[in-house]
Structures are given as structure tokens and as C-alpha cells.
Length: 77
Image (cartoon, rainbow, N blue to C red; front, side, top):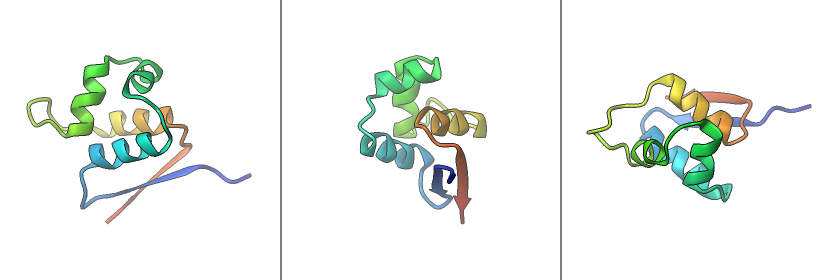
């Protein structure tokens, strides 16, 4: 059985990459926020890489990937 793997690239904004993947999977920000157990506004700020919100840590990135249905996450330089 193969695992669903999400690949993120270190030279691009993580929020933008995850937003593109969310849209590709046809998942709304509201649905994703509900799945992650966080406010919709957090997802919105994260996807925009809003500097006033701060940078998301690895835990948020992992929660986001898991909420999108991924079982494994890889980072590429």
C-alpha cells in the first residue's frame, strides 16, 4: 500500500504551496479550518503568508498536510 506524500519546496512560500494543493483537491478554507480545529481566519492568513500573522511553524504545516489527507510530508531544497 502506497502512502500519499505531499512535497513542499523550501524556496517557495509554504502557504502558497498548500493553498494551491487545497484548491487542487477542491477543499474550501472553511472546511479545512473545521478539519484542523482552527478559525477560518488562521487558514486565510497562513495561505497569504501574512507577515502580521507571523510565520507558521512546522506543527501547523503538518496539521495542514494531514487535514488535506496526506500521510507523509517531504521538503525539497
